[in-house]
Length: 267
Length: 302
Image (cartoon, rainbow over all chains, first blue to last red; front, side, top):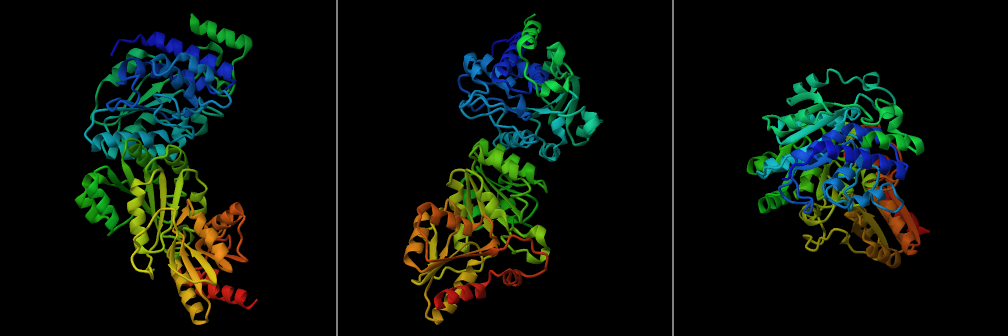
């Protein structure tokens, strides 16, 4: 696989995403921006795939469990050659298929539709289990939101994956510390998160979710247990007025705000 | 079980997952097919999620639990993960209606037909006989999309002998008759057959249909019953709202073909708090043979 400049890839995904939500009048830009670096490293450096053969048997599988950040996935897939970047203009358009929550229907490279929280990890575990049953080598990656961990189904799957020793499964928690109405800790405290997941039988590593070096270093290795990366991130990362702000879970950048966002990202 | 053994021995892609139920039922299967059997624990949301991941990768997945656990507990997983992705997942549920009557309302599977039927890409099967359950299982493995198989410990024997032409979506005529029709599904079809035999002795001929597939339902058979007989009774061991009876009425209205008399027998939109065996509770809620006989006698006298 050719070497991809993941910093440049991340910069482009952010610009695409801001343009997409601006054109589509859609929400969730803060949630997209917090996980862009993770996507850039996964698609730029870590995952095996063939963009022109999206169902290639030996590909690594990726599932976005926090489906509301779908714009980021569409953007990374377009940048990595799964389809033309011009298609991104179709996001949120009436009658077309690029829904706000990441959709697999008609979009090459998207493995699975998500939108309701707490669905991605059990499915990823099933895909990982299939590799074990059939003695295949692919890995399965899934990004979960930290707020999403309120859903009990995740913890069922944490138990299951460790019990079945699915060490080909990697969960990356986009730990931006904000959920829909307040901070995570004020809503339903997760801490001590790393200890919790460790105690479920996972290999847990906490790192800076915007450091490509740290992400690459952790993701490239193989582990004896299922891998959970707690990626500490900033919601809205890259656009100053969106950073750490709950309102950008909902709002769409328009006019001068849009122009400022693009200026900051193009720097 | 026989069907599952046959399927698993034919293809290693057949996987059976249980939500920690089936003690005494699955041990031989687990021993014979260790790589095709998973006891996933008491975690139904994860069960359907994992089943979806396996089915996305080409596995033919059967999941098993009882009562409302494999349906209502994980309804959103069934809708979003299984049905929306049109996966080959077959949900087998033991405990139709009041099969576990005395265990209490948590174990009464009485709204499952209506709820499962409301999901696009879902096939709903409630076999009336052991043979139907066997053939349904075999056919589900190759039938596209998600199937819901509603099982009970049915004692019904097909009066015409072994089913040889079972097809998903085609009702079977278990007993012929020209005066009235009873359309039933599930183990409670035995009440329909008993009622029909009682009515035979009174000179009233009832056709008994096992409408084992509630979705997609057999429209042409329903139309024929409406046209050929003087009245149609539907019978189900489940809530009257949205179940088999509703499905049959929908077809009458869709085709604009109505029998002269129509009656739906089912549970009248309530939860059952009294304790009782399956037979006792059928009687208590008005869905046993005597209610069928009384209804038809009333029609016949009028």
